[in-house]
Image 1: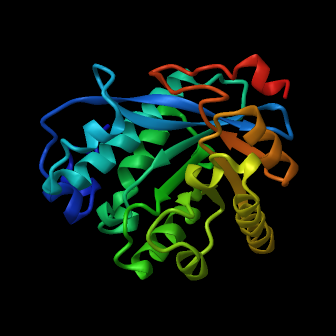
Image 2: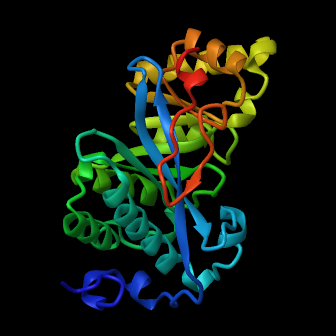
Length: 259
C-alpha cells in the first residue's frame, strides 16, 4: 500500500510541500473517565519525544515549513499505536489533537488518516479530533469546512481548552463541536470558588442546549471531581485519575473510581 506521507497523490499541496521532520517522536496516552458508566471512555494521544520529552519541547522543534507534515504524522502515529494497545473487546475513543491552521484542504489532508485507520483496522467512529482554542483560528470558515468534512467520515470533533483561548463563546457560535473540554484554569480550585462554579454551570447549560458533551480536564483532587460531577459533568481527565504513560495505557487509580 502506498504511504500517504511519501506518495504526493495522496495528500494536498500543503502536505506534500511540507518539509520532512528531522526528528522522531511517539505518543503517551492519558485516560478519559466516564463517571456515569464507571469506566474508561477513551484515551487522549499526547505527543512525546523518544526520551520522554514533553509536548512543549517536541512542538518547539517543529519548524513552520514542517507543520503540515508533523500534523499528518501525529495522526498516523496515534492510530498505529492505539490499534495495538486498545483491547479488541472494548469500545474506546482515541482523541487526537490537530492544528486547524495546518490543514490546507480538509478532504485531501484526511487521506493519510483514513488510510492509516483502514490499514490498522481502526474504526473512524472511534476517533475524536480536538483542536485547542490556544491556537488562534485565523479563518473560522475554513475551520467550519474542516469540521464538516470530518463528520462526513464519522469522526467526533472537540474543542480543547474551552474558556481559556482566543475565541471562546464567539467560536462556539460559528460552529458546534460534538464535545468541549473545559480548560483546567476554570477547574482548578472550583470546590472553593463560587465564581468558577457559576461559570462552569453556565458552560454546562449552553452545552446541553446545543447538544454538546462536556469533559472537565485537569482534575487533580477528589474535591474538584465531586463538585463537577454534582454539576452534571460526566467525562473527566486529569492527574487525579491517571498521568499519561509513554506508549502504554495507564489504568485509572482505584480511589478515583470509588469516589
